[in-house]
Image 1: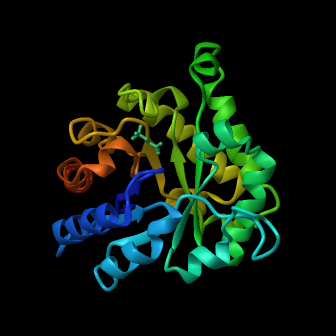
Image 2: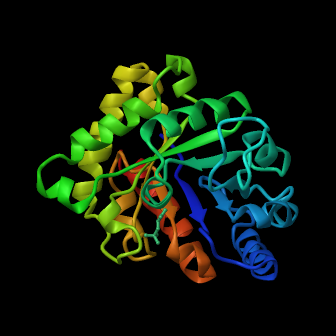
Length: 261
Ligand code: PGA
């Protein structure tokens, strides 16, 4: 049984005061909660502040990206060593907004995944197809191709240190959540692909989250899918009640599934 994981992607939102208030509310709302892991990914500017709010709470800190070099002349970039130093344990990599707005290729994502692993970070590798690719029947091929290229050069055992997120591009920020069947099907294919890239046991343990317009009302059915291990949450992660609702919904759905099996 994989415990659900809910990751908040705050994107380019929150001042320091807002980040502090949001982190405090999430921390307090998750107090004493077992059977679910929660990670907050503020913008780089908020890492230290949010990290100090979360210290000792069990809610973990993540970054939204990290460069592939440990240091160097890369104006505007932030390294995996720096986000680790700021307290991050997880780093989102290959998000479709990084791919779309900043031209990140699979090759860049692969370099970042390798760098994150070598700095002791947990890479949260994001993949997902566009609406046109889905319409053309290419969704599975796109996501398995992306994950295969993102993990190029990584040893089978090391793949077991990665987390994954299926985020259909057409679903991010649109209010159009994938149906549980759509998410479950692709995520099952992703797990099979991970079995080939790594090993069966590694694939069986790998957390695969769903992302794209996750809300408290869509999380229960999504989390009831065996291959959906939680959510990567954008818009709804900025609203305390919605985010906590998602955390509780995922936890309850997995507990129900465990009791039924
Ligand atoms: P959304 O974003 O929940 O606002 O759709 C998800 C994401 O981009 O990770």
